[in-house]
Image 1 (spheres, one colour):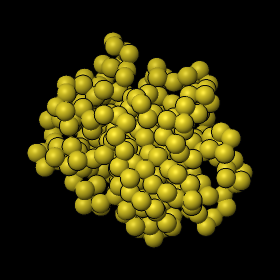
Image 2 (cartoon, helix red, strand yellow):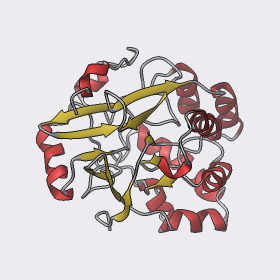
Image 3 (tube, rainbow, N blue to C red):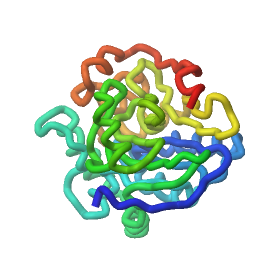
Image 4 (cartoon, rainbow, N blue to C red):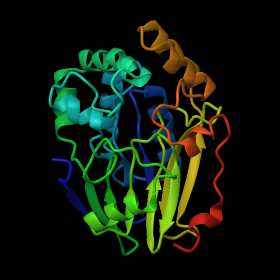
Length: 282
């Protein structure tokens, strides 16, 4: 099932890329306002999955996303919800802190989604394919063959190269790992725009998205924003969701770095910055 692809043809103009809304209604509201201010139509806004997650407003978030009518692929959370599974499918190590926390937030999300929201989730495609600026683009959640695979900046290039080969693509837009990055591998480009539902472990409450603009140099740019994160925090605590995740909303520091490779773990608390020259020649 992970390898199913929906082809949406050719896209033009500016694209807004993001992932991991994680039931964070306040962050989604802010992102929609950014898209409108940039003049980006909803069908040029693409989510890499996990619309549902750690925060306190899963039903409201799905309904707003549905109303916005942006494009999305299913993250592992949507797949599990669609199949009425009892866990989030995040590929956390059994018994880890992340695994234990998921036994709180996932049942909460499942219990608070109404029937029409579940039907919406079931209709989300697993992967997207399109052409942009004469490049073949694929949107995946973790990787093409494994929706829950964590792929980071420090993940060996060969792992990413394999995905380019499997998908016959020039650009991969991926999610799942929670951290924004881009990497050129030969004439290919891997983009993770980051997530908007949780900070990026850099000690700030900022969350991340990316823009692709075929008429700009560089074509790719990463961006962050802040939102009403204090309200998000209060709603999480009010609803008995993990306090550690609620604290992360405020501090920008992950409770633990269990899923992170050594290179990314050592960057905890260091503010993320992107050099515009990284993709200027793509």
